[in-house]
Length: 267
Length: 248
Image (cartoon, rainbow over all chains, first blue to last red; front, top):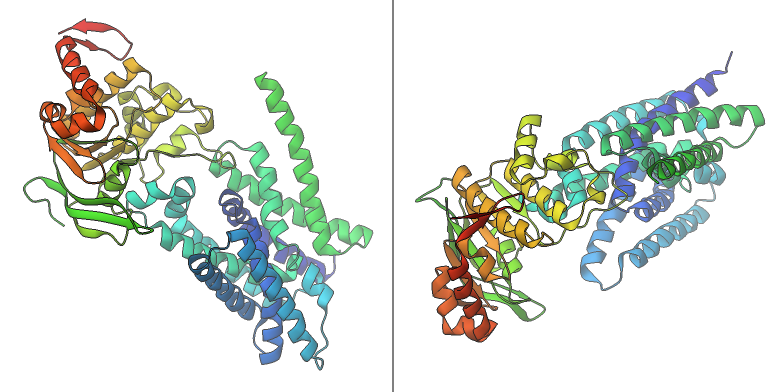
């Protein structure tokens, strides 16, 4: 009925949606959307490194994103610049340096559009293993650090005072962010990854009243977006990554009606 | 870590310097099991800083902090809950510890907040929120409770009732309490030892000693100690939780 590449794309997208759901909640709660963008932009540099040294793209992206995250923490401590300025500095520098390095690698044929907006239909079996294996590890680690991470998201001092070690949880979470970007870049591309993290979560916020519900709805929203986006991409011959994000946006708009209702009920 | 001689936390000559300014300096205090130690002092006198040093929230401090327990319940002075995070009171209660329904209900009941259990945290009034904060800190049956202005936003009758409750909690859980207040005469009944701070320890002792102390009078004005003595004379009745007044 469907071609193999389409089935692989579906399996890959579903795998990513399971991970972006819970991580996206923390991105929204901790106001890290621009941080996600910065890591995603630095992924371009990771890809060029992978091509230059012939190593696995996901691993290379993971390493570069982690390095950028560490640099950010150091800069935050040692400069008087505000966080958003530092994020902008790193995001655009990493993007620019990445593009410059690509210029030097003229001997490599390179699909820049696929990198920017995703190339889910080209997913192969190795990618599936990385997505599902890496995704499972991310979710397990997130489950382990859930308590301190969540408590410190609500209130840092409470978590620290009552012995939960929020700094360690935050550092591990940063690594998880780098990891999700590394495994999902092929699905939606580096310009749209943050959208995959945030839009289903924003939709979930509109229709949930507890953190647990928000995580579940966020996963459901991501899954629906992937399925709707891929099928419509097949139907209308639209680019698949942007179609997934557009589907997520559609769900978000639907969820706005739910807010309107609940506000009316209150009055 | 063992608990010796009922001492839960011991600060020896601690100080904290930030941006070339001492926030507090040379503060020593001991909180023991079953005892309530109150820090009072004007705004910016280092009360919260001292409390945070005691529970290890400040690094790079001068002096020595010995903590003999890890079971700490903390009510911070300022806490803002973000609207992006949907959080019910029942979720908030299990923030740092796993608790069963029964313990949650018990703690909420103790602080008169049981009817708020299914409310969204963002919808609570200031006073209701303080009661929930207190319930959360108490629910895990800590050895040491650190309460930073725990009754802010609570109405006057509720305030005295809550201080009474804090005293009861200290007795019932047999825990030590480090309490911060800007107002000596309302904590009067609920405290064993008062430390008056103004960047350093200005004076300390029983509530009565402190109220009569000259340095305290200088810091808060003659009025303050008079209020206290008047209050003491008036103290012939108690306010119950529903606002009722009973003669002693």
